[in-house]
Amino acid sequence: MTQWHIHIDAHEDMAPGLQALVAQMGFWKNDFLHEPDHISYEPKWHLTCQPKDATEFLKKFKQLEEYVEQHKGELIGYIEGECIPFDEDISHKPFNQSVPIPFRVTEKELLPGQFKQDEIHISLLRDQSDKRLHEALFAMGLYVGYLPHNNGVRAVYTVSGLRPQIYALLPKLIQYLQTAGGGVNCSVKEERIAQHWTSSPDVKLAPVIDRIEWL
Image 1 (tube, rainbow, N blue to C red):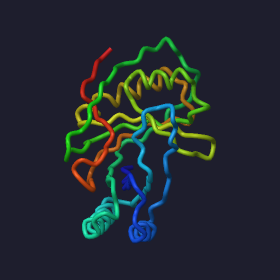
Image 2 (image 1 turned 180 degrees about the vertical axis):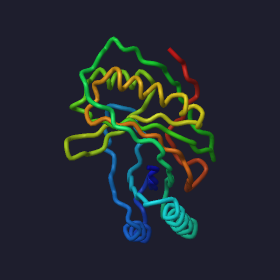
Image 3 (image 1 turned 135 degrees about the vertical axis):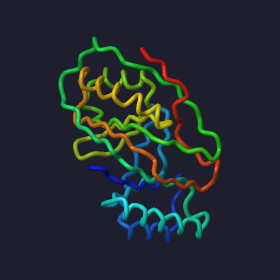
Image 4 (image 1 turned 180 degrees about the horizontal axis):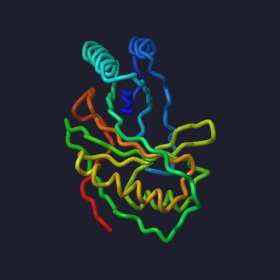
């Protein structure tokens, strides 16, 4: 079943009026942990809303977009509306280090005014999952953010880019995770960008794929 998400990623504190609106709209706050030991693309604030269908998604995104356009400066950052056509759990099994990684990606910064088209998120429990799986995901070129979780800390590995690039990587990543194992409470999602808004053309965004090296 297709899911719909709207995320607000704010680089600075949001104005009280916007905070009141997003609370009324059903957003909840789930900020990333800011760990000092890795390159970080996490915003200061990360809020999420999950509309029940495409109609509610479009209505809420429009409401939010109209507000921030009319109240310039209340949000410094960006809003992304996502369609999630794929969300699959990966069964846990011991890590098999003989399984080779399928690719490496190099990344680039987006030009001002550009936005990603699609992305893959791999989510797993950081401390319970095999350290060698973490190393393999880094070796493939994915970047990571950490979210608090009831059972510890959840590591969310991400690779973003053009839709054809993500289509090419997704089956290879799923096959690798299923074969290599090592992930605890592991899942894979494809999140397609359906709508987006940025507070300025040069707002800080995470990098996207520049080149894929198949191994």
